[in-house]
Length: 132
Image (cartoon, rainbow, N blue to C red; front, top):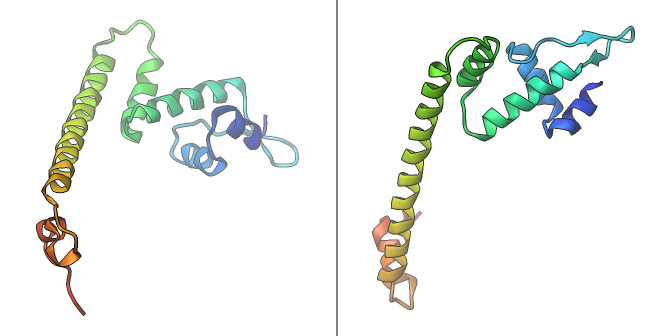
């Protein structure tokens, strides 16, 4: 299949597919006689794997690790589990940060009872903007 077909099948932009090839995340595609990339079902499976891992927030380095680990069916899952635990910890940290941000924004809204910008507690809590 050509790059456009692979892109549509996986919801990935062609530029991203080319990037993954350059970075060695996706094996280089064979070329047709007219020099078009010719992707196989293995490329489709690998790119689907990469897309899902990226959707779960894994970094490119972690995706490389997961791909390398996926080639060893007989190895224990400990290394995969560790990567997932690290990602889960990062997601939980981000959720905590976003929850704190939400709480702060809610508090800002509750504190503002002014009718005019000059009396606005929100502007005051942000620090007055620079006047030019």
